[in-house]
Amino acid sequence: MPSLVGIYETPGPVADCAKKLRGRGFTDLEIYAPAAFPELDDALDEKPSRVRIYTLIGGLLGVVTGYAMTIWMSYDWPVVIGGKPFASIPTYTIIGFELTILFGGLATLLGLLVVGKLPYGSFGKADAAYDARFSAEDFGLVVTCRDRDVGEVDAMLRAHGSKEVNVVEG
Amino acid sequence: MTPAPQSDPRESEANRDIMRVMDGIGPGYLLLLGLCVASVTAAGATWIYQVYEGLGIAGYTHPIFWGVYIVTFVFWVGIAHAGTLISAILFLFRAKWRNSINRGAEAMTVFAVLTAAQFLGIHVGRMWKAYFILPYPNQRGLWVNFRSPLEWDTFAISTYATISIVFFFIGLIPDIAILRDRSKGFKKLLYTALALGWQGTANQWKSHSRSVLHLSGLATPLVLSVHSVVSWDFAMSIVPGWHATIFAPYFVAGAIFSGFAMVLTVMIPVRRIYGLEKYINDYHFENMTRFLLLTSWIVGYSYGIEYFISWYSGVESEQTAFWLRAFGPYWFSTWTMISCNVIFSQIFWFKRFRTHIPTIFVVSTLVNIGMWFERYVIIITSLGREYDPAVWGLYTPTWAELTIFAGSFGFFGMLFLLFMKLFPVIAISEVKELEIHAKAHGTGGAH
Image 1: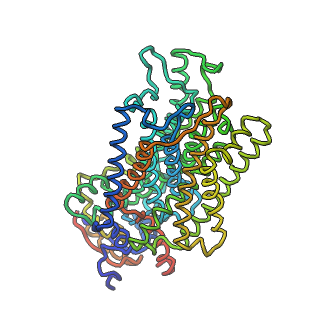
Image 2 (image 1 turned 180 degrees about the vertical axis):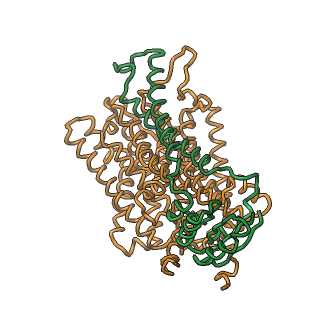
Image 3 (image 1 turned 30 degrees about the vertical axis):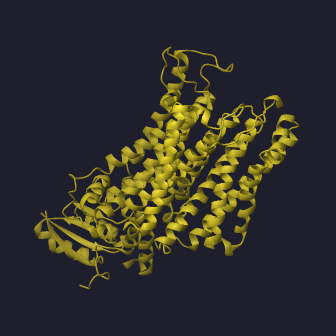
């Protein structure tokens, strides 16, 4: 099936066009952008990013590990230090806190990799529709559709201000 | 169709301007890099000699067993605070002026933490036994003492190093993709591997923005905790001059103060040499110098409170310690600290000087000097004047300590110079975000 690539200069029209196309039943869409824009976040998928689940689980795992490790180690060979209880919770809170951040941060990185599907593609191979201009200042809206829909999609892309529309055979 | 406004649609102004920094290696750059490498080599040789000869070649003398190495450790950990402050806290506050400086500051954070961490090993002498601090059972099955602030420090610093590197790398991914699309040969291979196949798809950006947001949320309390924990290395003891509840906020403010000063000291020449005036302009300097002014007041206030409380407490040992700080054998370091950190920075009350680059450069450099002396004052004068005058001592840094101290600047400088030629020193995609927003508004949103 052919893919049409509409090139835009600003994110607003890309988001509008993508939503209209989805409304018309086109589901195989992709957007390329040179920077992060909130208007594009929900253009293809309204659901909140699942990265937050990773951060949450990582953080919780961290705090549990922090307390469990310190308390277990203190009881594994109990030594009274400074007249304090074996499990000196206030001081172990610092370890619990640091591990919350550490595990949470590493899990966020993992979340980015899994949810963002990185590393992507085989080494050095990009999508057929990808162009170096998308890491310059242009936006790309890619629609993969049946041959008979090409005319309609092309018209919609242009109606939303696409400065050029290219066809990539996929 | 109307032709594209730019001659080459595959290029943008921000890409060109910022990537120019990475082009070519001039004699000035090589000279600077050579100096850095030379000082690192000298420091490395000194360290090997110290390992062979023992810590006796450092100026440690009873009762002062924390010297320049620990002073320099605290100094570099402090420098490391600006990057996370700028990238995380200012991000959460939506302070858009951070976009031009966050990359440089984040790089400095990572390099400063790496520099600082080495000093713990250098300070303990037998660096190969540094793993003693990790939670593992020794031969008798005994675990580390988690009630010790030094143990907290291990967790705080290693977490900070890890999270700063993660933050730095995540921010770099889109910019590495820009480089990948525009390089050849070995560099292309390197950037292709590091870019992880980034194409800037909607899903990738969405996950990226979320990750940055969550990391900012995690890094904000982290940055406040790290220097608090470092301050507790001192405050948890009963040494006069250390045993104070104000230490945590006092250290955090000082760290941000010195970190911002270092960002200014480094970025001013970079901006000038590579013509980045368009991206780092008066607006940024004005904001950063205001930050310096604010934190200089917090630091100055803490100095005042320290003296007030030592007098008000009526504790003789505290009073003596503070009296001797200002008028004892180390008066020079105390007054350097006060002048550099509190007095000189007051010039930023005047708008004219907040945007006057030579003044900013001189004052930020003085702040760096002052902040190093602040740690010198806190550590050396307090240890040398504990409770019993019979065990008072005087400490003078030796050539070995000073060589290794100088080498730390060489190490930091070397990493930064290499970074400048390998990665964009300004976050290109973040700058573009602002530019494209401006363009969209300028054309009425184009729809």
